[in-house]
Image 1: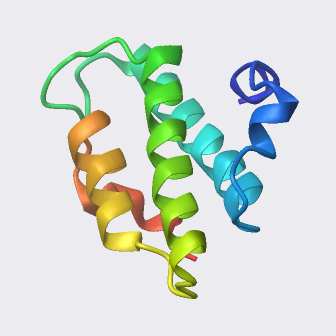
Image 2 (image 1 turned 180 degrees about the vertical axis):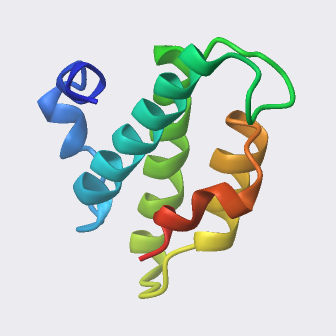
Length: 105
């Protein structure tokens, strides 16, 4: 997790005006580290073997930045959790949503 989090440019954490962005990037780095760690167990618990890399994390961070910037611009107090969980968990990481229980706030 430290490796993933320290590869983030510090200025990119301030690119998004939403106050929750840096915290959610940390949560995303934690999730990415968990997914990467599970690789060593092979196909146990996964349907398809896939090599998760830094580009997956960067795409997820871009999606997070886009959605939170838009929410902040529109003055929405509520975060778009359903969209974020679907895009990050189902589309990019191909993980069933019940494995993302720790992603709840």
